[in-house]
Length: 96
Image (cartoon, rainbow, N blue to C red; front, side, top):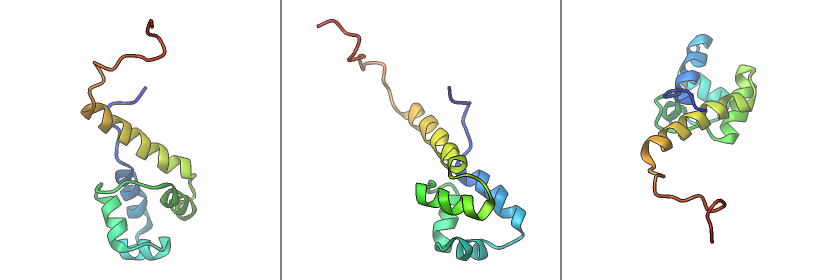
């Protein structure tokens, strides 16, 4: 069950970044990504990939699953708000 409107992973990452006292440019260099790429995530215009999750886990002492779970929950919530499944029948429980 998804919680109500979970935060984007970028919102969580902003908290971690602000706790370092380093600039976005410094963090991006440390992660070996472009400043633009990091800014896109921080501003919730891009999601966190599996590769990024590994980098963030190394940089912030978390697990990659920590980051991917935030992204997954956000993505599922957003999709639920957009997708109408009311007319889709369960293919495994229908009579022939």
